Amino acid sequence: MEFILKKFMQTCSRIFALKNWCLKRVHRIRRRRFDCELNLSEVSEKFPDLRDRYLYFNHYFWNRAPSWLRDHRTFFSKKNRGFGEDAFHAMWYFLFRDLKPKTVLEIGVYRGQVVSLWSLLAKKWGVKIEIHGISPFTAVGDTVSLYSSGLDYYKDTLFNFSQFGLKEPILHSGFSTDPSMLNVIASRKWDLIYIDGNHDYEVAIKDVSVCVKALNLGGVLVLDDASLDTSYKPFPYSSAGHPGPSKIANNMNRNEFAELLSVGHNRAFQKIKVL
Image (cartoon, rainbow, N blue to C red; front, side, top):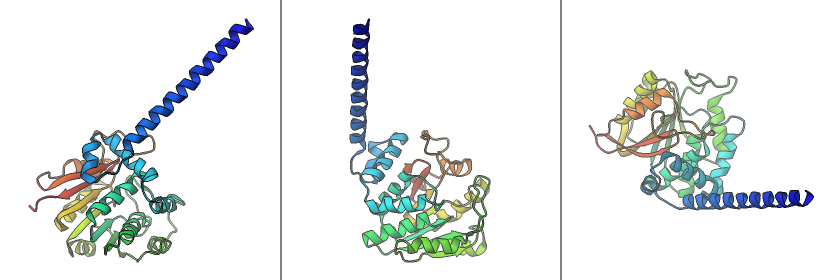
């Protein structure tokens, strides 16, 4: 009986070892699949499945991107300085590397994670850039967001820029629907606009309606939290977004805009025609 039990345990051990070897082999094969250098158009061609595309950008962030990109993300991941997902840092890396926008605007700055990343990317590549941000710089939220009170968001954003030795952005305090902020949006033609402000449909649709007119031909509009009702099925550590921005993204005029890229709940549309 003892001999049989010993043989049984040895067999189980071999099976367990074989299982681990197979799992490691599968992991290496999967990793090799994502371990490649691509440009924006090649990403969509190679990874038409939105989950695979997300995994590519997540892999790129952790395995191929420069360490300073991860350092920036690490800083903003602490003390609730920023939201988002690791893959989004790689997404911005690709957009700025391939398109090199010169005039950029974010609606909904929070504590400056995205605008400071833009500044860092431009600095690393020696690109002259003009960065604007529109935000109330208070704890006011919307139906899907709550923020901490007792923080000077304007000063905090500038402080976070200083931690990376970055030139201060041009910040505008107010709601994106205020007349003065509408004037800011209409004051120039933008190469890139990121809408990450109020996620309620009634407000977000106004932001988009104004911003599409202010984009250069070839300019890019990025919508946050906009991938509900798409083929993207989020991983446990990710999100598909919220109803308001998702409805807007799904109804974008495809005669005027082509979807350039989709990474998780971020969707980027490029202006291809002026209507």
